[in-house]
Length: 242
Image 1 (cartoon, rainbow, N blue to C red):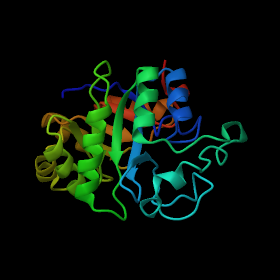
Image 2: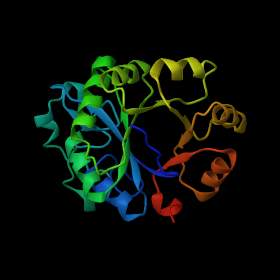
Image 3: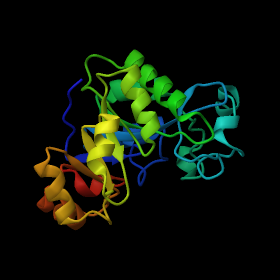
């Protein structure tokens, strides 16, 4: 699956405007002009793919404990919105299928970051990649999967070789060529506060698109685009999108 995301991508939906990784966040991103979002996906105790960034529930829900040790039935009962603002009370932790349905309603593309804590990384990559492809609507642009975990990306590539992949890093590793080859990743997603102009020149010269996280001001985005960065992930699409 070939795909070309836009320059501005909502981070965790629109994490500065609505509770992250929720259906409300997807709708908020769409309302503020972005056409793609990034979302975090991990597995529950019973192997279901859900949207949650953290390994634990405390920060973004009223639950406690580790996601990988919690069944979907328990997650379904949690409030995932009140922590952000009372206006979002009652928001639920979406399954991957819930999120894809919302993306289809809003006509948004997506980057899905595979999270692997407390679980077999290869299993996470396989299950999540298959679930994305199984539920993805043909009318939407082909999605991308990303991860810091190379084992998960390799498993995703084996399970769904046509699913586009991106490797997540902080600093540019010295062996980036080897890592991209091992994961068959077509892009590198880097920390905005660590990327350098030399990094971007080297990657672009090798035909590797660079996208940076997390950028919440226009000046910062402009500086990165001037370097040759292909896209940025933002919590505040209202500040960056035209």
